[in-house]
Figure 1 (spheres, one colour):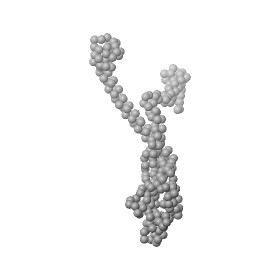
Figure 2: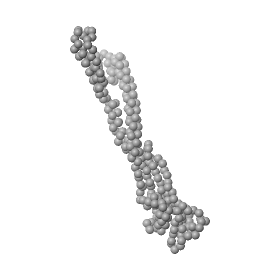
Figure 3: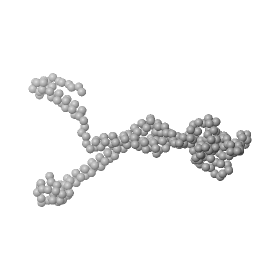
Length: 263
């Protein structure tokens, strides 16, 4: 801040030092006023507390939404046929459903199978994780009615070995890995985590300040209403706190009903 000093003004009795000292005091008073920290009250303390509490709450909400909210679902699917060549020997064909083709001469159709590999993107307000669930096997045996869903084959099952061999020959190692993996594969999108936490933090701060503002308005309205009621009670000679009739008592006597001292 720029401080200006004039020489001598009228009314200073001709003392330049006195004028400069007065101007200096006024300028320093302005500096103290504008640079002073505002006094904290219950509302500013509540707003600051909400600002600090909302950050860990935003992180907790982001973690919850990551496990609960599914933004998109997709399924990678591969179908094929198991052929029986006799004497318990099987072979598999991927992506082949033409029953009249020459390939069916290699064996008798034994079963149809489908591998479904779900893929989920989770999180809110943006995606925070990508989950690759294990592939599920559905089998339809031609000599049995209906399709068996989510079939768990034994470790040394010939059907399982045929499906693995068919996937290997089809060069689809990703589907084979997802079928053999015991649990979901989760890939964290850290940019999504940071963005979600910041957005939820801002949202929680805004909501907290709106709630504090509405609470403050209600408090001010009720406080003014109580002040108006106290004034009206004083005018009618009643206790300002409980409304007891004090007419006939001393001016500074305490209220016999609530014990408050009258002004």
